[in-house]
Length: 393
Image 1 (cartoon, rainbow, N blue to C red):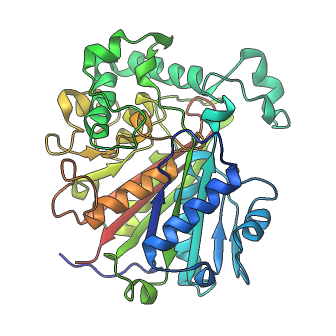
Image 2 (cartoon, one colour; image 1 turned 120 degrees about the horizontal axis):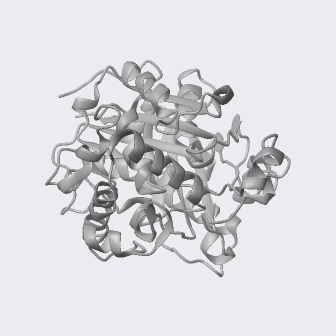
């Protein structure tokens, strides 16, 4: 089925995911440069074609100012350094599409890169580098870190809705089934529910296998005006809808069982004129298994509290379940570059729409794909973004 272009018509013309998962001999800037080159080659464009640049808090120095100079980008007309953690790169695609629609640019480059593996960063650490944040003095005595705050959300979801560790484990099992076909994935071993439950408990109720990998890597995306996309050799992937927001402490009215996607996703579906029932592939941000389950509910794939039933028995495995998810292995098994997984979510969704995913996990005749991102922590405050994309037939 063909569909009309969106009101802010823009297309994703190039993607690239760095193959390295440990990069001790690279600088962060070098990784940014290599993924930029890869995405431009994928699109069939050059640095001279780029007139807009997007990066987030992972970029070194003065962000886009330093990186534009390092990359050799000249005469840029548009810069964006919006930082919403792992959701940043979905937000950048949205912003780039709207900038293109209003004539502010025609070719936008978005990059991400980081070295948390080489630098010894993990989700168990209290982020003392955020000491200037307004919440820091009030929360630091309780030692919040990504891992324990997500565990808190999992425990609350279990209390409210009866969700089980076995159900969460099915999410990791599905990711592992997909990762076995990805030669670059950090974890390629196919797991069972028992394997997940038998892995060490890290922060009750989350086991080690409920957690994402820590990896050096990066990725890049090229967003272009549709007139340019039509001249390129790749299948045309167009933006159809987007939504973004933040969720915090809500003035003390805290509910740990939902994310900001509960507000952002309806905006994306409304703009795309689609419903969750029409989505057969979704790239879901997967810092932890509970992150996936809560998002699936907030995205409308099932009702709140029914995520556990939705994911069990392999329902997220491509070719087997009702919704294929993260067919590259996702952050749970493949790659979580710079501890910011939103970039790879967009990249795999584009691969699926182009028909470039591994044949064993490719969703046949795919028309629409969704990508979601969470940046920050579900248990404290986070950014949230949703993109809906389609392929012109």
